[in-house]
Amino acid sequence: MKKIFLSIIALCMMLTFTGCNDYLDYEPTAVVDEDKAFSDPEGMVTSAYAMLGDCWYQYPFNLWPYGDLASDDCLKGGSGTTDTDYHAVEVFTTLTPTLGPLDELWYRLYAAISRCNRAILSLNKYGNEKLGEATTKQRLAEVKFLRANFYFKLKLVYNKVPWIDENVYQNGTQEQTRNDELSNDELWDKICADFQEAYDVLPESPTDGGGRANKVAAAAYLAKCYLERAWGDGYEGSTGADHINKAYMQKVVDYTDVVVNSNYGYLEDYGDIFLPDYNNSKESIFAVQASDYSGDHTTYGRANWSNTLNGVWGIWSCGWDFQKPSQDFVNAFKTKNGLPEFDDYSKENAHPVNGQPNAQKWDPRLFHTVGMPTFPYKYEAEYTLTTANSRTPNTYGYYTDMKCVPQRSKGETYNSPWQAFAMNEYVIRYTASMLDRAEALIELDREAEARTIINNIRQRAANSIKKHIDYAADQCEIALYPESYFQNKATARKCLRWERRLEMGQEHERFFDLRRWGLLSTTLNSYFDREQNDTYDGQVYAQYYKDAHFTAGKNEYFPIPYNQMFYIPGLYTQNKGY
Image (cartoon, rainbow, N blue to C red; front, side, top):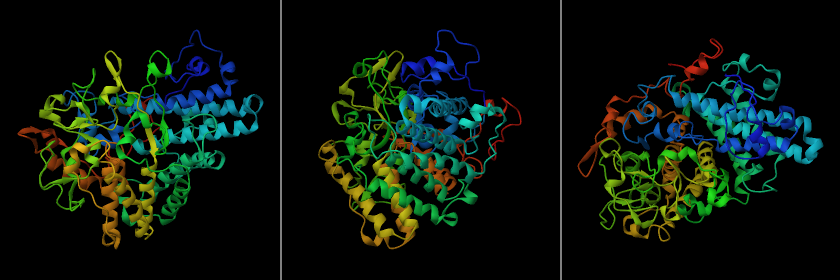
């Protein structure tokens, strides 16, 4: 890994949340002396927190290109297949280690880990003196949580990554630390150990302001880690139902017990979850904090730059029209007698038209998640979408994402030539943690308990019509699952997996869900065959999928970036197949 230097200290001492380049290899001017910076442990902790939002469309920390675009939920969007380098991520056949965004994401995540390591060293040396023993212990636990969060993202994307902790940093052995030094389980053990320290030490609620890590967030994250581990190593030959570790599944239940018994819970209306007015609600277990400069009185604010590209064309000043929901994703919301059309959903493409109900009914979450021509954009009739609100319909169709953007009437944060959205980014929301719990319960033969969770989520969806999407009421139909759907594990799994797709759609998890279940190759290759034949009112699109193919045993993980592989030749080993 590239050697990390100390060029961000001035910003750390200013306690801002503005990212900078941790890798400069010259002596900077007009910065605070290194020893002085390290002597401010609280400032070093703040600099580690700042990296949560140090995102950009080339290295989005929410991982939308890898969780959504690489899945069957999403098309890239933009002006065409050459707009950004992400086309390779959705077709796989042209995906190589030279892909620029992969290198930038690796680079920035390790910059974040570097700040965590330096904060730990500062706390160890100066914490008790400057902050007191109790606060120092809590801050150390918070930074361990942050470091584990960044490593979790690295593990999801790249699989084999070097473990660079504060000891490696202090000893200067970053360039001797291999990425295959730890086995899959050993790397997970390291990540879980950091989260476990946070869980053991932190209070259930932050004592000095929102946005800090707490015990419940650590518990929910531990559950996520053990759920990932429980199914196998991610490669299809050693992942799936035949490889389940029930002890890990039990840990998922144990840690989500803490979440269930906390002050977090379901926000009453599904649509409210994705409005800035409800940032840090009881649904939000842990989120990256964003702000508008008019609200926080800074020059630029702290926008969610991961979603810079994902505004709707013609609605926002800089709507670049990326993250386009797929037809397959829209079809998945079809219902019959209020229940999903598990086996028939993709046999015929369909889409609703505002004010023109027909026999086809839909799960109401469709109208909260996908922007469609004739329907209000984010519930606002004055911004009703038309076919003109898609930038390249002959390539990417007419659907738009609605979860990652605010309502247009609330104004916009516009710094030419970019559009910025002051939307908090959920890292873990309560409903996602409950779906983790339901998944584990099914694998532990406790299907009835899982059904209760899933039906609670569906009931919330059923209740989400009147407030925001009353205009679609006559097109919505959703029912609770009867007991018969949870009498055997196979059907219960199908219900859980469908629920997760609909509830968490466009929230950057679908690819990782399919990988965990060992279903990537069968799901994606079938999707590629269907999606390339898309039409919308006569407009043909998505034909580029004729060149797409997912290769099992290779594409489950993304390649180690070329620049990292050859910075010190021979130090790292490449993932299988690349």
